[in-house]
Amino acid sequence: MTLAARKMQPLIVRSITDQLYGVLREQILSGALPAGQPIRQDTLAAEFNISKIPLRETLARLEQDGLVKAQPKRGYTVCELTSREAEDVFKLRLRLEPSAAAEAALLATAADQKTAQKALKELETAAKQHRTDLSNFNRVFHLSLVRPGAGRLTLHVIETLSVIAERYVRFHLHPLGRDTRANTEHREILAAWLERDALTVETLLVEHLQDTLEDLRTELDIKQPIKATLQPEA
Image 1 (tube, one colour):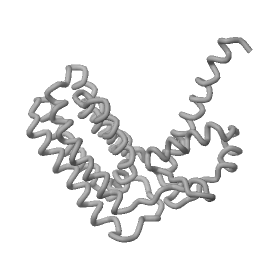
Image 2: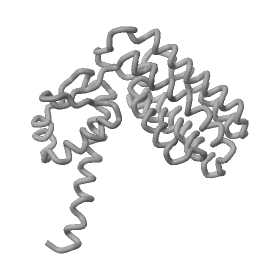
Image 3: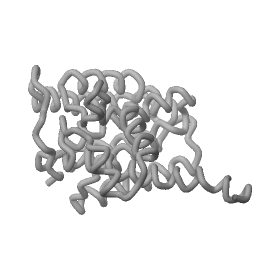
Image 4: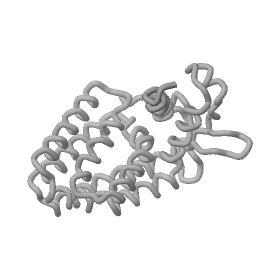
């Protein structure tokens, strides 16, 4: 085997892992792999015609995202949606995201502003099309408001929280009209962000995230995890 061939192997494996990650992540977010569902590694390896090496890498990555968990002698299962985790995730977002977005508004370049505008436009288009992956567009928009001013560690933490929150956002947006309300709030936040009105950005984003948390408190059973399969947003 030539040196060039040896260098290409990790790229090929990474490509397989990335593709598998995208497929399994969407299946979990959509509810095709419901909460509590065991991940059958032998079945998946046979279905995708791959070895278990990229599959293990993918499952480790999904575990970091908080979407699956490893259990001794039982392998991996899809994590439950719980009110406790929703509280934890959104309270952390409330502590970090509004102030980070406010700072980013002051530091954003013209290119950063165009990126945020594009992200909102794509989110609104996805909402009109009733895309089942709407929460992904929502996450991209929120991160576009934070990225220009956040430090490396702060951004990493916010990105991680956003990934974990995505299933809850999808669950939250399911009732009719929620995506319309959310987009109205997004437009107000973006307008203030583009005007570099840091105080208003922080205030509006706190209200936006707090409203989502309040809705989730109502929808999620206080003591029991949600096990029902999620449905696409209406």
